[in-house]
Image 1 (cartoon, rainbow, N blue to C red):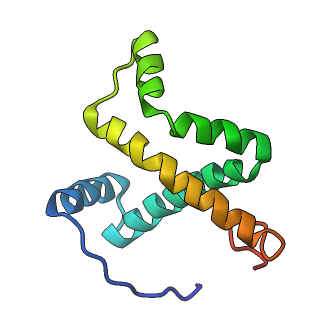
Image 2: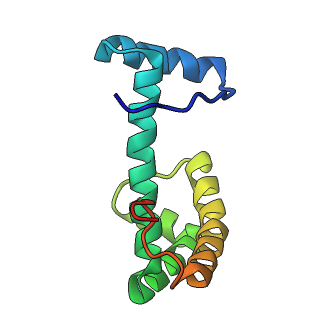
Length: 119
């Protein structure tokens, strides 16, 4: 069995209760449940940030992220509402993606994969 690092994190009690419920349903420990959830979330973020590296796709994604009201309008047109919290997440995603794209451009040549394999 591979060794694992122990870390300490602080979470909202409501979130802990939700994680515990999912761990119970999965019949695993809280730690195992959190690790599974983090693994999926990290994979999703790696895919998102990987798409930002593509010059064409990255520019399209960035354009969408830079205009959250357009996203809300499109969602409304297809019958999907966006909550104020979701709209706020879209608003913060644009600058975050822009910084990530800049960082990835700076790293280009030093490291090309986000997974950390071979790095």
